[in-house]
Amino acid sequence: MAELAGLDDPKVRAVNEKHGDDHGVNLTKLRALAKRLRTQPELARRLWATGDSAARLLAILVCRPKSLERDELDTMLREARTPKVHDWLVNYVVKKSPHAEDLRMSWTADPDPVVASAGWALTTERVTKRPAGLDLPALLDTVESEMKDAPDRLQWAMNHCLARIGIDHPEHRPRALAIGERLGVLKDYPTPPGCTSPYAPVWITEIVRRQQERSAPADS
Image (cartoon, rainbow, N blue to C red; front, side, top):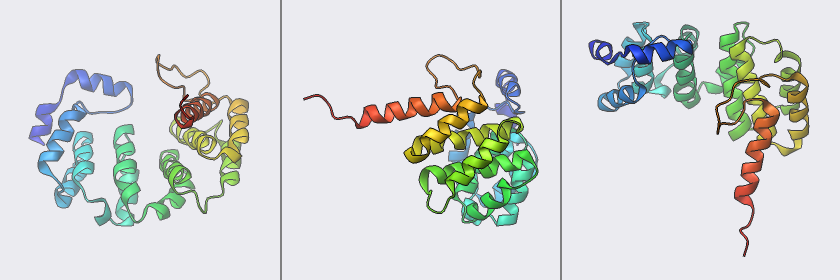
């Protein structure tokens, strides 16, 4: 904890606070510390228990995802209220856990929108990598009826799922595009030059265009 405190940078903290995070540790330096520590499950639990966001990010990097029980992961997710800790926990730990599918189904239906957003993130992972068994039309029905009025983080996660359905499943692309156009979610989101807009119709169209360019045969 003393070493983490020594890495705290007020400028980094100020930038992070604009995004809802509450730590000031440069993530490259945090990763270097984690690399030095290597995997230490018990240390990870002790770091997590401090409640400090930088310590929790480090805990995520040094834990052993498959050693965490289902209820332990559920508790951790509900405690992870800042965006970076939440995102890292889902992407670096839960997705590697044997309990991921059980948690996905539980979290997606949770009344807490932050918890539900984790369920949608896991659903998006399946849409892209393991779609067998998913009811994609039903997912589109839910997005169509609920995304417009969802709280920000849940809306963002549902929008990501909508975009990936449109990108990865051509048979559902026309409907995904139509839903995105009708709802207009994130249509006016400020997007830096050179970046793709998160507005689903633009996102889908651009990524599909890039994929088609990469797969097109070169001129002889």
